[in-house]
Image 1 (cartoon, rainbow, N blue to C red):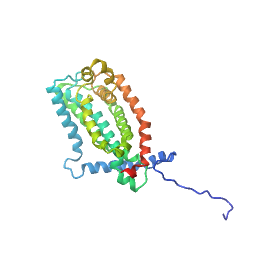
Image 2: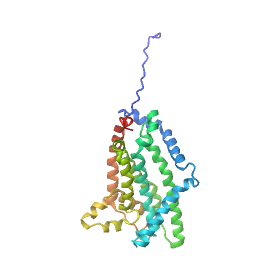
Image 3: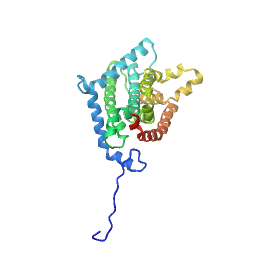
Image 4: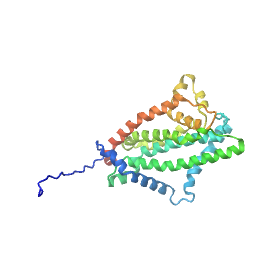
Length: 288
């Protein structure tokens, strides 16, 4: 060098599964991409629809009426505490939708985002994060509809929700994390075994009725044989749904074993999901 000093050569290494801290730094650097992907998903989902975002209101409300009629009127099942049956059902639909949407979007991310992933570099986990953010918009609208339903119930039947209603957004983080990280865990297997693409939606549909979404947690446990009641109560999704209902319904009992089970399962799948997803980054291009 002319000035007698040495200059350091900088080398940038781009690798889809880098084992250094740069991968995690890139997640923060590409945060705007996650927001843009979320915006794109919302735009594509409701593009050229007459109702638009109204579909995020219609779907859960119609499900609420159908489930309330079948399980509340026809089957004549009891509600949780003194809450109207429709509110109990809607309080179960919200966490179930958060779980199922995040699970479905995360598990199919290598297939749904393959075109973008093949073209440019970015931390691949940004794709499911963006899809999850888009799902939050629908959930926020559903929460607003819940407040409206509670207001109508107050004037029609005198139902007064618990002050814990303010905690719903906090407790909602649990079904989001549970669905997101279990979905990440299954995402590499979804491209290796394409039958999973058909099986997972089927299991989600069955799970909606096996899990106490349309009926109370107490009714579900009592319907199970005595020797299996405690095992059923450890269902993490059931624990999440019961916790959300506890936030809304003053007389709903909080079930600690199922709630703790939900936290443990989520914490277990956080590292497992991330590890499986990053491992799948290496080979997904050859499989998709």
